[in-house]
Image (tube, rainbow, N blue to C red; front, side, top):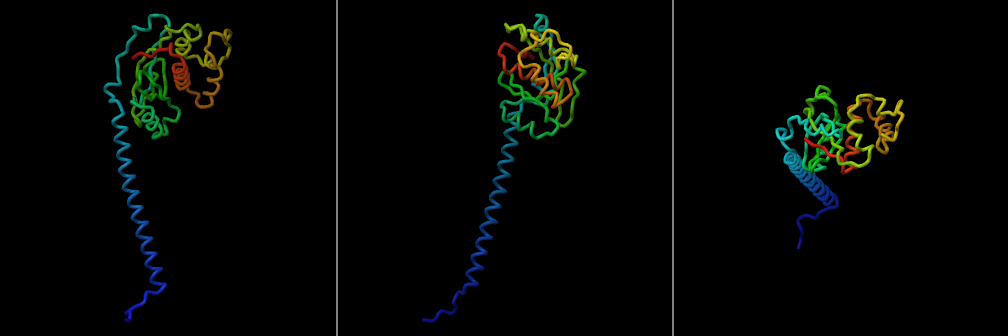
Length: 213
């Protein structure tokens, strides 16, 4: 029996190349579709974890400031999330938030870019949007004198207190204050940013400190 045509090596190579190219195109198409679906899912997930702004804003409350161990502050708040992952992903999406902090309060994760002593001191932004969030830092539950004095220290607008310049009684300051302040000075010279990171550090490390809205 005669075969009408014998497949040569060249045809085999062409067929192999065509099959490989087709396979690669199919894989790339699948990856693109998968990434598109994952991006949509991630965006939707973050939207679901973002607590509405209407429930973030609160009225100023000065009742807790009267105990002598509490002070009122104003955070430049950009959002509040139900998970740390969602909050940090939000921060990574904006270059302007490179010196911001994520502060966990009662199971929610707040994205702040600064903490000021007055409402007027908050410099709001449009991208991402922000607003002045009033809150009270209380040290009434602390037993250590240095921690009890923390709200008063943070309330100061005197840079010397943050840098230990001309300070006589260093024992009035919490542990590591000088080390942390020095490290923060290399990040920013803005006192409201340094104050925010000091507050976030000591609040996270000491359960006796409370933040109330």
